[in-house]
Length: 422
Image 1 (cartoon, rainbow, N blue to C red):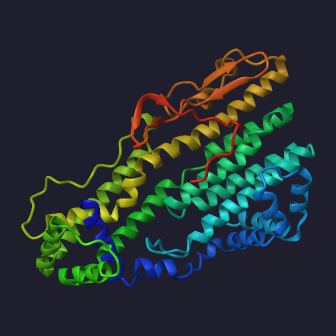
Image 2 (cartoon, one colour):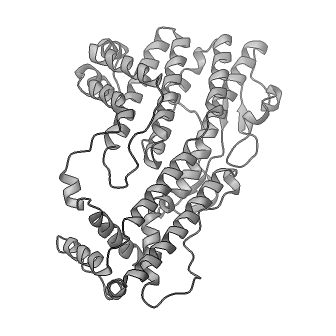
Image 3 (tube, rainbow, N blue to C red):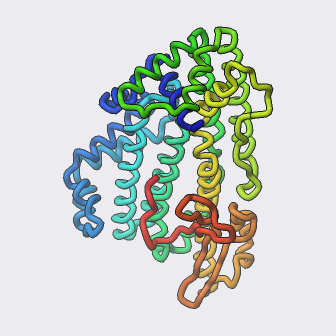
């Protein structure tokens, strides 16, 4: 029920600050992207307009010749050149974050489109024996992932997908690495690990956006809020139940000082939630805790305690929803980068000794072999022909999304299947 009431407040808030309704937003075209991403969006459009690329990408059985033809298409070449030029420029965001803005959609969709083109180029470069060039392409993919990740939590998650796409293609061709290539791969992994996480900056942008939205409610009456909601509900929203109606009546009864008091409380609780989430990012994955729910022990004023609770929930809904995902993905990125470096060391050892190392400790890897999911060394199982290297990964979940104690989903740079899209 609280979720329903929070949803009502979100609808009202968007309407009061000049946003379109849900149906109107659905029918309206995407807003222009931040100018910082314009070249990326153009590159993605060039790829979408290439029939050769789209045909090769849509066909999982596309031949090497089809992939070569796709990359030889002028639009694809122009797209990849534009991407490379864009990656050499700093991404300076000029638009403030807006929870109701659709301008990010072309950016995240474009990032995935370009990542698939980079993976295709990696494949052809490996086929040509141009391993060094293929690793440079992987580096461009990782730079792309980082460039889009600093906008919002959504773009950060898409950046995770981009890095998975390009490292997956690289991992499929580990057997082609020479000793020198192993050294280059090791340096690439170290570069990846040294790159600062954009997440703290992303959370700060979202915190400021939430506070701006709250401040826009100052001066609005409870009657205006509820009146707007009823207009929206008449367009197809389900009828509020009796408990929600009682809470709506509370909001209607609020006078201006009470509304401002509730907004001030919500501001304090939003700041608290984001501060806790940011602090959690500095802890190892296995030590973190999810952001606390808004404080319910404060004295409850007769006219609107539910209002401040639901309002805070509305402003932190994305944070609360993805908090566990955020921590897990942060650990996954670290695991992938460290696994990449360990693969390089293992294969360089093979060239030196003509056998796989008996244990990761033989490589003197330091923190590189530490699993961010449990703080222990990665799982390493050598055999005569090959080896298995993986992180224990997060806990598996049941059909209801609840963690299964003691059951994990390993994380590896395995070529068995393409990484899932978020």
